[in-house]
Length: 113
Length: 163
Image (cartoon, rainbow over all chains, first blue to last red; front, side):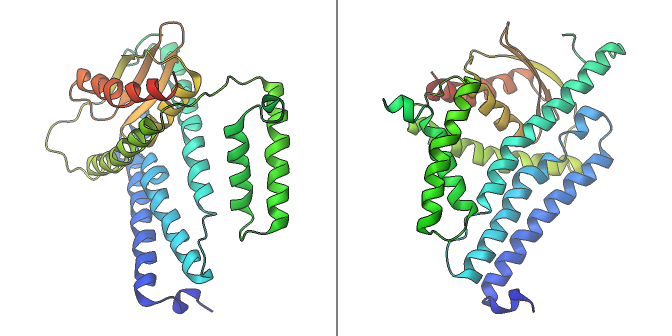
């Protein structure tokens, strides 16, 4: 059974619109991974999905569960909080590793330590 | 006395809220467990000896949050436009050094989160000895503009929040 059918039409549209916009942003970020040329440029792209894209998808999920359960379902807020707090750790780790390697290889575009 | 029971009040409040959010509808049993979690886990944290956070100035927190919310949307749009190839000028990406006055660890952590959450800026490396932050910017038009933006818009407020 499809729970979206039980929602009022406007709510179903809202949920779909939010999830779709979030998904499109994440897709744009993934395309960026292919389109951009250098490593340091590529790292910027997936943050689209991890920031605004994630926010929109979490919003869609919160609206959906709140309306279908008839109470404020705020649990998905935690996904947003933990993703926001942990993404920088991964990105900084990647950036530092890349900078370390490029310096050893003598890449002139990376500033020295 | 209060310090012995609640060494990190903000952490305890955060754990309490997290536990309740994870467990769905409010019930008396969950409240009791959440209370215990909020009391016990900060005692474990005490062994790690984290610095005290000492957050100040709720007004500055709200202002910073609103700035960040606007900047996240704006920079998401800007980076999406770059990826889709809709830019009016020739784009140049590169590294910049930002001299930071902020020394508080929690303040720096929040700044790292903000800079990462706004696509287009990437935190590469921070040197604690000189206070210099190496940043990679995807659309680097004017180096001075970026430094002014980070120092004037974020760092000033963070210095108020984490004195």
